[in-house]
Image 1 (cartoon, rainbow, N blue to C red):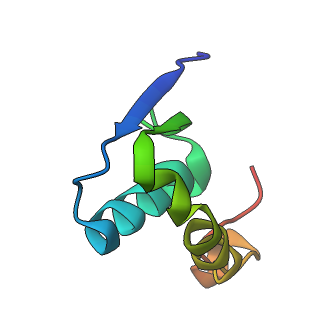
Image 2 (cartoon, rainbow, N blue to C red):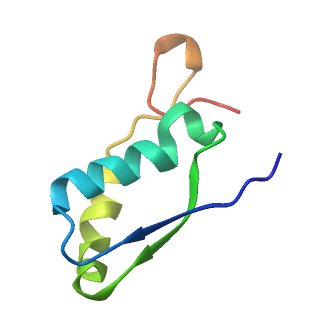
Length: 74
């Protein structure tokens, strides 16, 4: 129904946990859940994590839902 959920990541967040949580919240259930994050605001030094977030997102497997891929067709 068009919810726009935001996430603010502070620079003192634990990096690995924050990145894993972001990937799960943004792409889990193919992004089709009511709490899927559509906007991430990285504050201060957490902006330096962008390349790691991109690399982690690139590891997600896309394919048919019946085969339990990370991201399936909508």
